[in-house]
Length: 516
Image (cartoon, rainbow, N blue to C red; front, side, top):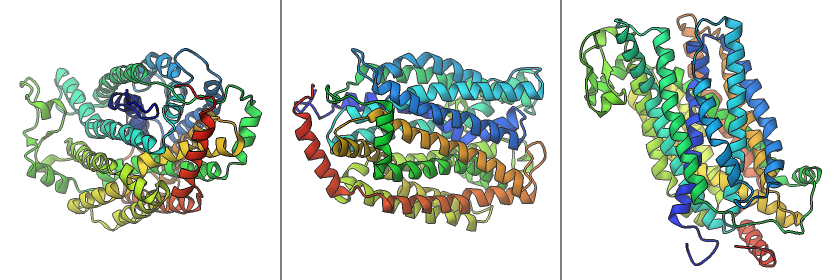
């Protein structure tokens, strides 16, 4: 361990980051695939699927403050927050598999009930795990620069997980679906094959999640403890929040921010599957030498790592409707954006140290708004334009990712600085409420907009009207929401100078009772 008790070792930073990587195997699957999974795989109507997502995530959002109150009052030899990560790990794994397993022979009403129940269970466990995890980062160190570094580690791991989920989920589903179809003696992939592909892929991700949670529990330590004389009630905790103006601003900013992520994820999936020209995507994939003849029943399965990951397009340019070209192209777009994000995230601590977290976040969201709106101007054949804008948005947005979470810890410090009471759990829990509510509104709004304004019906072939809806939602709507976040961050009042002042004064106070 470093000599300074507020400095964190490489192992602890990396170990802490593992659990959020695990969380993103659920989170990014929800963002990128869940809307289409419910409509295209479960066969649920778009408006009904939107309601399921809204109810499940709003329940999860309301459950977050309960977990926050409980976590703040948890007291074990492992600390307040680490035990929650340990004891939710196995239930998470089990429910994650169930949520993406399609029951056989069930009626439409039974399928809707199953989707709602498994989604609510998964979101409940997610809340009980991820809220204490987020609060854990606020009590591992009180050093503002160390927190920025810790969150950089965290979000490098997050983006590695997102790279894997975005890059390989669709291709693995297609791969296992194709293998299942071939076992049945069929070349064309049916719905049952796709359902099988989802179940196997999510089982792989679930086992990986379990392993990562255990790593975080075993490698981290809680250092910042509240004043042992502190005596507050949940009512007092909530009253303090309402007096905390930075918390109010970040609450609404988080609501809009995560609305963006879920709406954009669902819209972009359909943008590439329905708006982007499949022939142009095929030519791009072929330029990377990632095409091969169509698979036939009875033939030996091709080998190689790219085949294993499903990153090869089988078929030719004359029959792209039945090929996996959209899945492969979309996977590479996700990997490109995430790869750039991982690299740029590494710059965020130095940028924050020089300019302050607020200034970097404002600039990043403003540029992301411009880049996202520009997507609307692209023609369906302009694959290079899609790639260029993906890189531009990733470069602009990446530094904001860890800094926003470091800002939440600053909000908790501000509350302690003003009131003399520390309530890290309730700060992160209510931010979690805004986060989950934003996710719910984003996914549901996307499906409701598509059904209400563009007459989207997943059971019918996409019309020109619905394709235009995918295009508008993924660019104009998301760009406007990025601009709203920019304005809210401008209003946020904790700048670089105030952060330093708060940190110095709290350090002096904690010397009287802190334990290491």
